[in-house]
Length: 453
Ligand code: UDP
Image 1 (cartoon, rainbow, N blue to C red):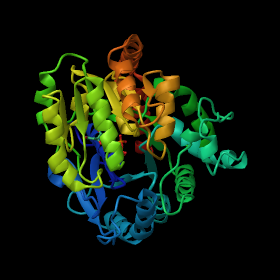
Image 2: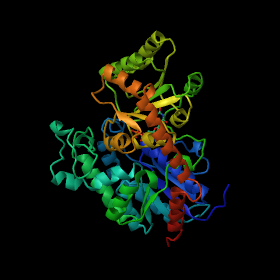
Image 3: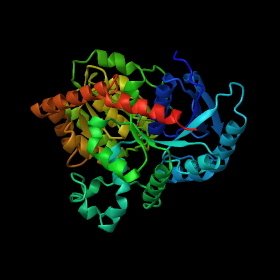
Image 4: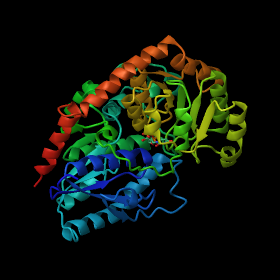
């Protein structure tokens, strides 16, 4: 283990899987650079300290009751957490600052998820420096910074008749790619993002899970706009080779031995992340599309993602039996291991940023099916800028699914995309090595933190 540098970092992840993973990876990266790490976490989606013995953990009461802690309204829950956590967070931070405890490693700074926009104000009151972690990419963050312009030009609120129209101010974005969320209050996503951008601008810098070579142009735009230091030090999971998992659900490792039996680059891996829901009609189309494609598949059907919980207990085995072993369904997969497996030839994804970056890091071309938030922006860059994936054009219907899978796994087009994806994989692996862009950005981040008085 590296020598400790007598500086403590307090990390405060938003308690959603796609935010917890990168924050804990960041903790590993900075721990390896000598920092002591304390993770503050909410009771909602509480973390398991035993999986991360090098970190100290403190929980704060978020005051959410069972009925409020529902993942069906993400902006609602994020805004509730922002309102309820201020007091307990401030109390906990104040206690750590004034009586740091036995080991007495002083706090060098707070690193907060940027969606916890209240934390900067608390840090300022306690005279603690604050950095923000934005867990998505630079491009989507930049799109959020230009939302006021997009509103002024009439693209927002998004009209269903204009989804295929180009956003002239930001090619190759289409109107349908502009971030949106299903919520009781459709404007809430923009208010949350506005608060997030204000918080970033008031912070001592923003850390991004991306790399310079992937998003160079939009990183430059972001640096101009934010006027605080920007540290693209990703892909995080490639910087910290750790075996500890931060999954909230148990990973079903049986899929790895199943993959071992499949031919190289033959399997389509299907997963829509930790939040997206799938209706019964959609499940049926996905199942039939996978069956029609005649390709092997590994499909994650997360409990809670399907309306009828009984479906998961009964239907998959009948469906899989009919396919005579050509497919496997799990409730949660060790995704990074799956994507790195030689049998996986394509990833049908919702284009959450972690999934997108994990796929890029392993050179796996994508079938893009964005569901909400900034996933549309990520998917547009995958298909039109990095050219390592195709959109599920024509909608979620069995014939389209069959067609898209064959394009990726059987046809020449897929082969070309795989070549492009492997070139990006190489860049993602070089940037985290010594003198690589992310490694240099990490050195700069460490110096920045050590310069805080
Ligand atoms: N993930 C996983 N197993 C699964 C599905 C997803 O470990 O079966 C992980 C995935 O590797 C990623 C995270 O869950 O790190 C999902 O984050 P992402 O940003 O892709 O999507 P979100 O869940 O936030 O919509």
